[in-house]
Length: 147
Length: 147
DNA sequence: AATAGAAGTTAGGCGTATATAACTTTTCAT
DNA sequence: ATGAAAAGTTATATACGCCTAACTTCTATT
Image (cartoon, rainbow over the protein chains, first blue to last red):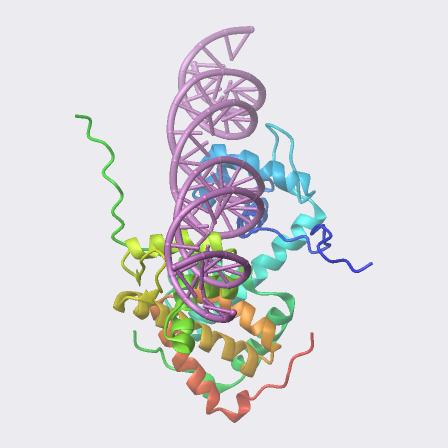
């Protein structure tokens, strides 16, 4: 009865970093444009239009986006939930790198972009708490470090 | 005749995260065993022996490891340099998550493992400086956050 | 020295995520 | 209302990193 190698059909519905990027991008586009278009997703992610379709189909199959051929793309409630999580991780990470560490904004953003996928809930929760502490600690107002 | 696309001779000698993991692993094995064996690399990285060979060839072609078929594997000076960089990022990131944020050790390690590849020099330098500050700031001795 | 088992390699295959190019559908300006 | 341009799709191809299975080489014990 031990669930050894019983097919990783886990509730641990793991999304790839790429797929997470798509969700995050669609959320941003929905904010600006109310809907996301394939072409805009492609532009934001710096990939070709043709590559987007297949990924949207995957996300649709996982019920994370509403997708009909030639139609607009929107997030399902579950998709939005995930997108928001990733977006929040991005925001806090970038803030940490840029405002606290004084890393230049572009680098801070690029770094957050990559790290946001690697932070689980436990870590993120504690990271937020930590940031709040830092923000009320004048001593921790560190000087920009030298390169 | 046709001017074929001149091989993208990457100036920005970018290593994939996987390749960086190999270097990091080989460095650790060299410390313990003086040399790294294919089998031990496979075990540490939790991949199959057969997969290691191809990656070692890539690293050898980039002159980051010394590799001869059926021989031991060691890092070249350049390979060691990169391996050390990544190892240091790992150590500091894990320390931050575990000791400062009070994330459990396993999670801290897993998180560092993924983030270490996303941190450039500028960011790492400032991160280290920041950690030093934190360590001398009793106020910043935050309580463990709740999950 | 023979040989069995361990370690290493090779070949072929798979899944993911991308590109390119041709094709289809939609949109918009007239 | 129509036709060209824009947007979207499809099919095919490539790169990467992994796996499996069969094969080769090394090694350690007898």
